[in-house]
Amino acid sequence: MNAKTGTINVDSYETKKGLRWRYRIEIPGTSGKRKYLTKSGFHKRKDALDAGSKALSIYISTGKTYATNISYGDFLDKWIEDEVTQRCKESTTIGYQKKIKNLIKPSLKNYRIKDINRQMLLDFLRKLYDDGYSFNTISGVKGILSSSFKYAVNSDLIPYSPANDLTSMKKGGRPPKRKTRLKPNRYLKKEEMDKIFKRFPEGNPAHLPLMIAYHCGLRLGEVYALTWEDIDFENKRLYVNRQIQWMQDPKRSRVDKIMKNGLKDAGDGYWYFTEPKYRSYRNINIDEKLLALLERSKKRNELSRFYIGPSYTHYYSENELIHRGDKNSSAIPDNKIVDYNTGHEVNFIMTREDGTYITQRTKMHMTTIIKKQLGIEDFTFHSLRHTHGTMLRDAGCPEIYIANRLGHARIETTVQIYTNHLTDSMKNLGNEALSKLF
Image 1 (cartoon, rainbow, N blue to C red):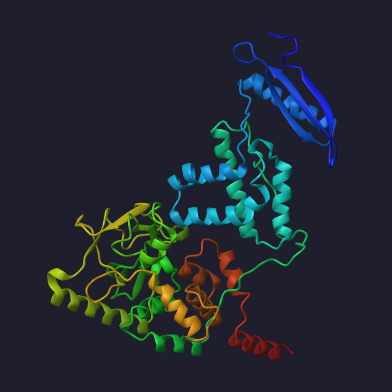
Image 2 (image 1 turned 30 degrees about the vertical axis):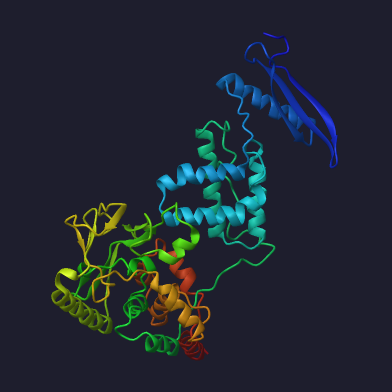
């Protein structure tokens, strides 16, 4: 072995930004050829020497040099394809991809993964905070950093993760340099809801989903996943046991996905059931007006099945569904919906007269009409859920009741959302209380 093997050599060099330092360590190569561990760009000689000592220590203990030059941007693409898509729901994967594209890559994509250190990540997170991003957004980004670098370690690309125990700004600490970016939830007034239901009356494919979301506060995927077995007409209760999601065919073009999602010729994509968000299994009371609508809708459905007979469209799930379960139910995580008989028929509530499933894609057309024709420009389907929760708060319902009904994982979420929205009724109630105090 060469006498110089294992020696850490440190020298400086000039750059446009000033003096920089680098280390170089000779290690045994193959066929007698010299091989070096080297890294540059350090501001101080001590930093280069410390980094060189750590690199040499890792090499001695593991025999690995971790000389990969893959950029963090390229690595994230590989991580999404090889790891995330294999273990996460499609909706989760899409959420990761959006944060990576819009927040992480603009700042970190060109750095080699081996050159990223903890301080760089802390500075990056603090910049997001100062740019006004919410704590939830920053927490999501931290999760991506932590998981992706852990995968890099397990793939032998780096010796240790720079994302371990990242600490960023906390609530109650110094304020951000810019105001937090909050997308306000839309509260729909009664006169606006009257306009919506006038445009989408009973019998219209959009009417029943609108009514359920407005009267029960269900999420979009929960509304369209309902089956008739989920309705307890006798006890006037509705059970939330699942949500429905669309698995896209990765081979299809973006245009084809937009045009044909939910249709029979939509490639290899398919609808599937999965657990409610945050495993928020729950059963909730139904008011008399919605109950009567559901009873009329079920009767029409039964008549259609009878008169159409063999031509009626039937759907099945690959595995049995839970209809009246709870958080302790052992549901199948991803339960594919098919058109062949598996013995587990799915009696969707959202169907047309011939039994064909009314997918949540119809809400896109509905939303466009509400925004353009009815003039409620900031309407989203989630506005119905927010309106329901606000109405409950307006009526004096306790936060714990609202949280259980909406399926919030934490009551703090309920308090944060529905105590920050001031309706006319709340104002009048507050003013009345104020006058009595003095």
